Image 1 (cartoon, rainbow, N blue to C red):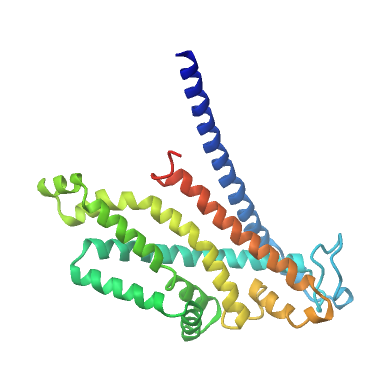
Image 2 (spheres, rainbow, N blue to C red; image 1 turned 135 degrees about the vertical axis):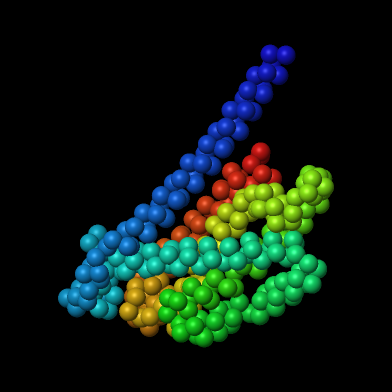
Length: 286
């Protein structure tokens, strides 16, 4: 009997420790991403002014990421570029997640005709090559920051919308929803008070997991010339410029910005996965 209690206590401690480690991981990742954003935002633009006496320097203690052909410090340019990517990813993902929430709930709660139309729209958006659709939307909206934000926001909601739709359909089949209807509550009341609260975990997790895709697509569009303007120190612009000089042996112009972009994307993905362990009711007990 005592052994059984001891084993249960040990298992409980392991679960508490695992949950604590998950929370600590989330906090550390969030603080790192926030630190990159704040550093890039508050760094003075004077730090990336051209200085031809420092052009083409290899990585060193003074310039850890080296300098480019205009003598600009690549570490400063990379951090400022990542801060722009984080802003684009945050805004575009938030808008896209809100669209997915409303579309998914409307599809499952509305009429059959509306459900068929939304499913057709989702299939249409998902059927078009993603990069091509992003380029078309960004170009139609005048490119630049506005074009990238609109392009990423209106093309990333489909997967989350389909997931939310299936979750809403499952919730609507529950017995307490039927009891609520018999008590005289309207469909709008049921949606607001019963369905939407259950969608909060899916919404938050979907929002976080959209960040990596939004950041990568923003960088891709900018790299191809359909995104941010060349005056801005965006990662896509830095990588696009570096392609001209890699053959001359200036490998650091592409390596460090590309590496930092991959790290930020992986951290966002890791953040979403860990947040899912805490928020998602299906995995929170594990």
